[in-house]
Image 1 (cartoon, rainbow, N blue to C red):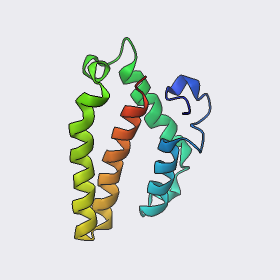
Image 2: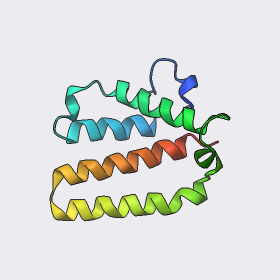
Image 3: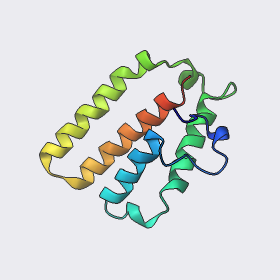
Image 4: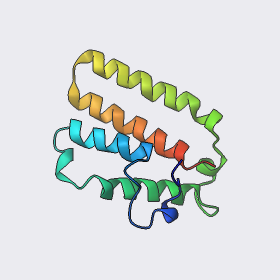
Length: 110
């Protein structure tokens, strides 16, 4: 798998990385989001999560494990399903953003 830490991506996450693929879909599918370059927000998101997980970052974020975060991933995924069923694309995009945050969180873990 591609590196998960922002410092290992000096310019941007590789397009083959699952997080970059998810972001690419999100930015294409959500109205108004396609106006910004896809990788700049991704770099920012990856860098923020790397900072939160750094040794001098947020204690709560550093303590999390794949297992401890499962409930949030499940909850956010269920919210995507509800949004899709509602037919409200703006809500779908919002919920996909929440899932993307969970994906980046998991990707930062070793």
